[in-house]
Amino acid sequence: SSELSGGELQRVHLARAVAQLAGSENAVLLLDEPTASLDPAHQHETLRLAHSLSRQGHGVLCILHDLGLAARYADRVLILKNARCARQGLASEVLEAELLAEVFEVRTFRHTHHATGEEALFVLGPTTEQEPRE
Image (cartoon, rainbow, N blue to C red; front, top):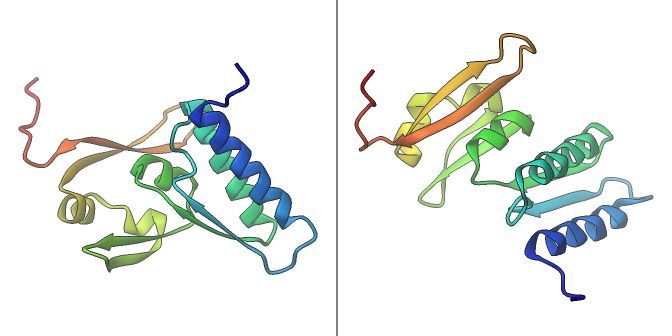
């Protein structure tokens, strides 16, 4: 079949948008849920590319619902609640458990990998869900 899957189509759209940045100054790349329909490896590849483009001086505005990916790749975040800004700033400062529980009604957990030092944000479940027993 010559039809593209949802993930393949998403990657084609991203490639087209990135190609349009070539030779542009002060260009801004707007990505609306760029990881939708992508497997985990391609989600990270996509956001690594977006982060790299921002490091090269391009503006990148990325809309994400995955808090873990936002925590890993975003330099700055803006959290919306009821279409209004609940908080904005450095991702490391904004993506904290109390605010995320208030805005998204989820419990979160931060973990630093013992070997690499990389930090990850995990969504454990809704705040209405009881804590698991040990």
